[in-house]
Each structure stands twice: as C-alpha cells, then as structure tokens.
Amino acid sequence: MKAEQEEQDKQGAAGGLDADSAQLLSVLASNIRLFRGQRGMTRKNLAEQSGVSLPHLARMESSQGNVSVVVLGKVARALNQSVASMFAESDSLSGDLGLIVEFLRRQPADEVARIRGQLFTEFQRAESARGKRIALIGLRGAGKSTVGKALAERLGRPFIELNEQIEREAGISVQEIITLYGQAGYRKLEKRCLEELAIANPEVVLATGGGIVVEAQTYQLLLSSFYTVWLRADPEVHFRRVMEQRDARIATPGHYREAMDNIRNTLAAREHLGQMAALTVDTTPLTVDQVVEKIIAAPGVLAGGGGGGGLPPGSWL
Image 1 (tube, rainbow, N blue to C red):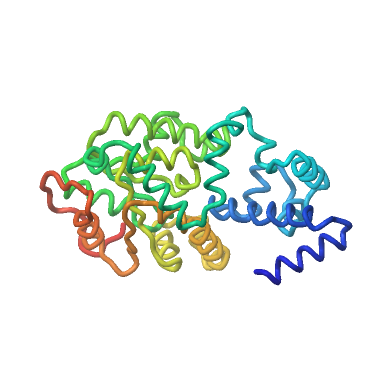
Image 2 (image 1 turned 135 degrees about the vertical axis):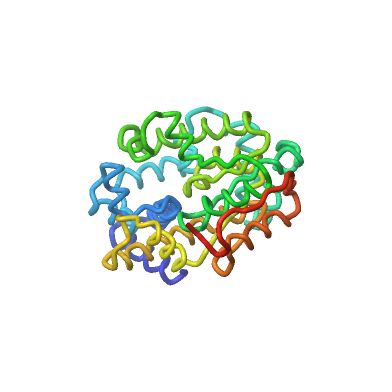
C-alpha cells in the first residue's frame, strides 16, 4: 500500500503537482472506488447513472483527477479547512458538531466503534422495544428473505420485505423508481418507508435491501430501531443462490467472473458496515433452521410466540 502511494505521488509530481495535490487526487480516487464498491456498482454502472464517461471515471480512479479539484484543495488548505467542509450546506460544522467531528476524526478506528456503541446504547430506543423488531441485512444471496420468513413464523410475527413496501408506496417497481428518480430518489423513499414501518410495527421481521448499510442516516435509523442481524456468506455461495433464483443478469457462465469480482468487492467494501449490526451469522455452512436458531438464541432477541412448519431443512429458496 505504501509503495502504491509513493508511486502515485511520483506520478503526481511528474504531472507538475505538488505532494499535497497528488495526495488529494489519490484520496479522491480511493474514495470513489470505495463508495462504488459499497454500492455494488461496476464502473460502467457509475458512468451510466452519473453521466460521466468511462474514460473520465477511469482517470479519476487512477488519481488523474480534474485540475479544478486540485485548485479546490489549495483553497481549502489556505483556509485551514478540509475539502469536505467546503461542500457543507450549512454552518453546522462550525459549532458543536464540528468539534465532535474533529474529535472523532483523530480517534483510531476501534475507538470510534466503541464511541458509536456507547452513543447508540444511550440514545437509541429502549432495548426491549428494539428487540421485538428484527431486521436482516446482507447482500443478495445471503438468505434474508428465506431466513426472514422462517424466523417470522417461528416468532409469530409478520414478515415484511422493505423493497415490496417501497414498491407499494410508489406504485411502481424498484427498477422503475431508480430509472425515473435515480438512486437518490429511491433512497429517500427507502428511508421514509423504514420510518413508517418502525412506527407502525412494534413486532416484525424485516428483510432490507442490500445497499441500505451504505446510507448513513437510514442505516442509523435501522440500527437504533431494530435488532439488526447481518447475514453473510462466501462469494461463491452468494453467486450460487442468485443463480438458483434464475437472475438472467448474471445467471450465465459468461457473467461468472464479472459477477464474482463484483460480489467480492462489495463484500469487502461493506465489511465494516456489516460489523455494526448487533449480530453476525455466516450462513455458508448452515441450514435455514440453524440460522434461525442462532438468531433466536442471541442476547437481545425476544422470542415471543410459538410457531412451526416453515421451509424444508436446508432449503434456501
């Protein structure tokens, strides 16, 4: 990593950039790749949704950014501000929030995680109320819908798919929502539906969309209002399960390599976000019933009501 950074700095210097400007472009490139990975987007997807050409995105992701970005970095440094603060839409970062953000920025990652845990524990809804609402997060193929239905039946609680709720609210499919209003429009609707579900359902099992963990405000709402369970699996298992769902977008041998690369990148980019959940269950070696048992046995899950039946043991469809 250090060697890569040194090489990027040399490239920046060779292009007539000072070390700070080269570093800015390097950070920008790294963050674009990270955010793209968290959303499970290929570079082609990002080009289509942003209207930025593939060659330009490729240059940005290889630290060959726009000169205007370098100029912005120089202005920010002269003002002793971060580049991010130059885009703040209010003066909120100049007061208490700014001091808190600066304090957190200087803490090591494990300390930030501990602070987040303390804040959520002190200010979120009562643990007993949260435990009666269970939310499942994870990539497609982790088993959210299958496990969610079986878990809801065992606990005697309703099962809800968040995306189905969003489609009912909008009157059109998720894909149509994204086509008409973009990712931003879909995410606003997702947050609103989640708020309504949390208020209207004191007891529920909820299966969320895979990308909900990337949206900070929505994810914080989920973590504070639901006992959140991260279902994860090996990349090969994700691919196999989606193949079994006969998803024509990737269910061909020709798409295997591209799909596997995308799954691996997305899993890696979302790893730290998934770890924020109250419970993590690796569904790779387990049957549906075994996953359900692990969730029910976890501290904080209030298993009210009986139930029975469900899917055949080992079934993931």
